[in-house]
Length: 149
Image (cartoon, rainbow, N blue to C red):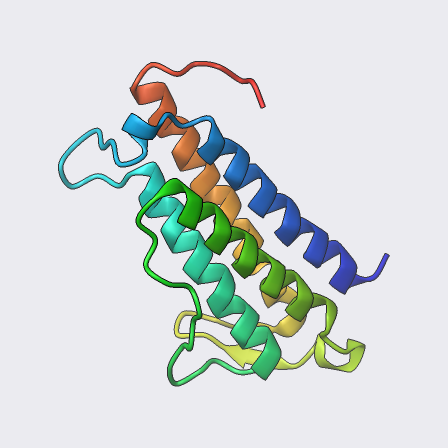
């Protein structure tokens, strides 16, 4: 398996896992917050949908953009969240698979770190996984202790 294929599958799996976690969240808990300044399950899904779209752009352009041109719209409900997450993860996986082998060592400087494209190919999926854990924690705060996927 190539680096690109492994990273693309990781991205796709992170999207699947995020949507499974979203599916386990009751409608009345989508915007639930433990504290007024806390974040909700929907906040994380919105962020990850935008983030995947932005990382696809980086991998398509092989550079940190002056401005992100994310296609993800305003997400206001579960159906839009599912649609946008699926679309952005699909775009990300396609961008990863399209990275030529000779570009994987090319450096891209993000505001916090410079690293090769091969490193950045897994960045968005790792970001998704981090927020899936937070979504699971939120579920435990309102009493959902289930592990059913």
